[in-house]
Image (cartoon, rainbow, N blue to C red; front, top):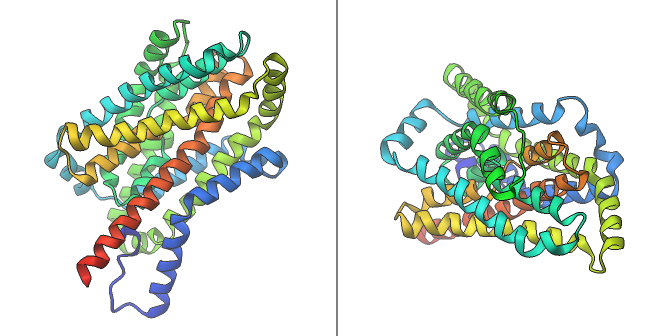
Length: 352
């Protein structure tokens, strides 16, 4: 795959190391799931992740690592080859997910309980209306999709999110959601755009060093994303227990499975429809369709958690976002591992 483009004249240990790193990187879903389970059961183990602006720093590091695998010409190629791919991807992002969140939320969460149903519904809609997640760039890298297009899509949907997200939430939930567009834009620039530009500049100025570091960045990013997911779950572990206790006293059905199911369903629809529309509707290449699928299915769930907090919604409204971070990372990485497996089989057949 992309991660191990080592020349055959390289020494054996190098190849062995690349192979190991590549395999570890493919284990992305396991790392994320493990971190989430750890965060839920032993919150104290991952509470430190939430200190100060550590999560932002971690996300920014992941983005810088991604930037180091890119060159200016990658972006120029995307815009030259598929000028329509960026608007198409952004449209998929802001149409498929919000509508899916609305429908899934209406069907399963809203009526589940008169007191907390509306909060859960709001939380899911917030996830649906959020822009593309930063981990999507990492998953695109693992899946052999178009990383430059993924970064462009994340950047565009994130910049647009400053006014599209509140607008969509308002339309779908009806209640007024106050979101500071400026704060959202500033946060995005700090966590997404700036680090990617820094990484690219580093790659341009010191390509040799950059190439050496880039062997380790995908796996390092996996660990950081897993820590962030675990941290979000750990921070919400109390809420999780309280709200499920609250929920189970309020209604007969155990609520957690319903919420987890709804979140999984939302992301599955995103990945599936996000692949079918570009591939068969718009006749894009496999690589482009994969990228749009990953971009659509994966959301900036941390943002949904932060938004639920900042608009003063009940604590339980941030639960779908906390679960979503883990759900889409797992689904996305399973999909990436599957695509990677298919590609390696095709390669194997080609070489025979």
